[in-house]
Image 1 (cartoon, rainbow, N blue to C red):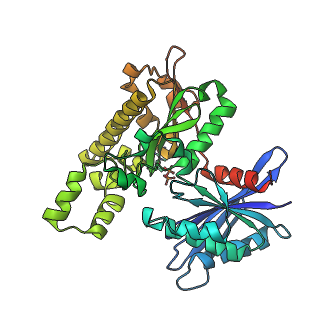
Image 2: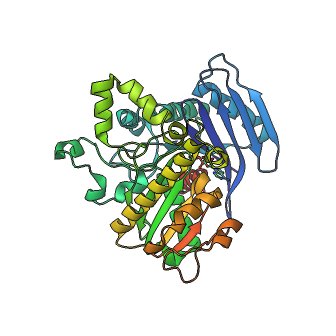
Image 3: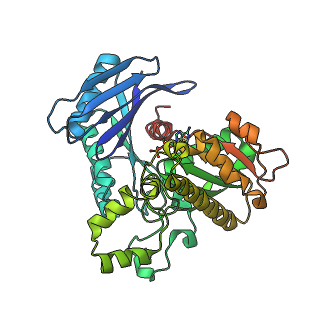
Length: 391
Ligand code: ADP
């Protein structure tokens, strides 16, 4: 039987998962990663059966090709005589045109290069992963799935900034991200809570990266992320919504340039920057430092504001879904957020919340509140299976 490999290639790591199409659906066989690209890289994988495999990757400054050679060697060893029929790539940006995943060929691969200026920190690494995979798995079909695709259904008012129209035409739009996560949740709603899918739903993906998506009838109508993955909620190390005047001030009065601003906004802000302690919500919740408490307070406050704003945009709310590392695992953050949202019709059940239940709203709540685990890798695999008729 053929296998399906999913890849999420970043600047210093490649995360992967291996799936097998079976009659009852896609079975996950293993997950793993190659970390430390550009330095001494390290391969690790664990199969669903619990077998672990770790080894250094050859090459003093291993790149994406070395990393995929490591994945290939492990596959030959752990799954002999099995062929990878499709590789599904997570690609951060699909521009305005890619509303669906695509089967890659030379032509559309070249077109994806033109989107690099829209996501210079991520897209080049995603493309390096694609190129390396085409060489390592020449017999496999290559699929690209875009984090922006799910949001292409935005109406114009949720897709634009209040800039002169020419900028919109030139591609300066509110693309939105985390699309694979939202699409997965939308499919979960369809299969587990079909009555809700038809309605007005906000999904809060609260992880190290964080955003919210407003959906109507299972389609995205607005997102808190915009042109880049910086906008909206504060994140582990990213600032979230900020007055653009602050950036103008930092440039004109403090002599900051594009590089130093990039470092500030992407790597040294958010929970990490505010607390001066950590980007990890668990560390902040356990800390007595006032700056840690303030960082969590700010995170919760911005979640409230965005939730209220998106609910207004939807004209009311039928369900809220919490997902991502914080959304799925932090009863405390969920509780602090939901406690103050009674005005929106949210009446939640603290004991169900603490117990980690899937539904944490009370029967009388006019908004149902669900906690659902997201699975972007499975979404990548499902797209590849659908596009290549492997399912
Ligand atoms: P990414 O966006 O990189 O995929 P995740 O979705 O894994 O990240 O989320 C990581 C975040 O989830 C971290 O801030 C981590 O502290 C937080 N997290 C994970 N488990 C818990 C928990 N039990 N309580 C609070 N925060 C948690």
